[in-house]
Amino acid sequence: MIPRLRAALADYCLLLGKGYADGSALKLVGDHFGLIQRQRMAVMRCACSDAQAAQRAARRVEVARAAGGEVDIDGYNLLITLEAALSGGVLLAGRDGCLRDLASIHGTYRRVAETLPAIQLAGAYLSELGPARVRWLLDSPVSNSGRLKTLLRQTAEEHGWPWTVELAQSPDGVLARSQALVATTDSAVLDRCGRWMPLAGAIVRQRIPSAWIIDLSAG
Image (tube, rainbow, N blue to C red):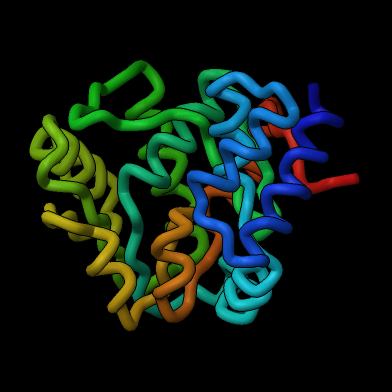
């Protein structure tokens, strides 16, 4: 299915560039290629128009530039991607160079076996980058965000990491307005924020060599 998914992605991105609505374009392409729901989700998460790709590339900053600066992290976005990588779940390389998982939160987050290892992996990597301040943002409407906030703060205190953790009604809006270097792969944030870095992709590619990555943007 990978060649078919790549062709579907190319067509979908072309339609986005012509101004088609996301939903109608995805249905048109999905029906044409006979894609099931999960495959349509994969195409959607990898897609962006040429203009979006160019704009995101212009604001992209390599992770090494985080040294000495301030970093704002899209908490669930980063954590769930790392959990998926550690558990052997599929990760998708999109047209904008970001790695994305196929997981989704429907109002509730549940801690899994990979949660603490994912936090520790992110912490160790960030510690090497050396930002002066790291702020994690979590969605307050999502159940168990308070527990995750506590786990993140406790883990940071144990290791001496300069973290703060905040619950926000809409982290996307906070991140879009942030003056810090933003760590996210959320398309809605990438199209609105100032500077961003591909933190999840850097951690996965450099620290999780067993990660299952499929590049639908190739070919």
